[in-house]
Image (cartoon, rainbow, N blue to C red):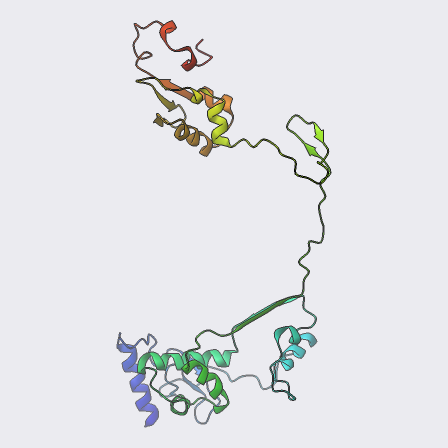
Length: 279
């Protein structure tokens, strides 16, 4: 009768949108080694109306483990002399580095069940009452107590024995400039070289360096973007992968009211604004 009542409450929580429970009774199941039925609902722990043939019991013998894995699994137990848990580095002496996050499947199931219960009923519940209501093995009382005290995320641990020094180093032998000339490093000091920023370089080595007169404007023949600001035009070229000043100058158009007047003689246009191909 108690199991039936518990299952009925589970169904009602699933139907109530405010309860926080999304799975219906028996929709999510787990294996229970306690007394009574073996297959129970993960939400309420009741076997009522749950098909007992859905799950097979855990294997009676452990699967074969690699010797190092078996040693690490055995080393996870507390040290008898001190009661202290071995660190991850102590459990894996042959590893260069390792990172541990998460917990056993049993603890994950218990954590989900406890969290579901707290979401529905609130945190005003004692540890003994929680263990009894969810049929949790008393050996997990410390773990459940941590959850009740607010510990939500499982602990993580890591170590790294690898050297931080690179395996292969590099030594500066020579500096080769754009013309192919080789220079010796400056005696361990700092060798200064000119740094040409793309946008600044495009402006300085094209007609964008000229000042506009009244009625004139720069325009890109590639993007059709027009602006009085040379930085805006230069940035458009650079963003499109065009950084060669000679190519930029071919694609650059300077529009002005003189050029739009057919009656105006070309010689009266400002020579600095006329592309070399037009001269």
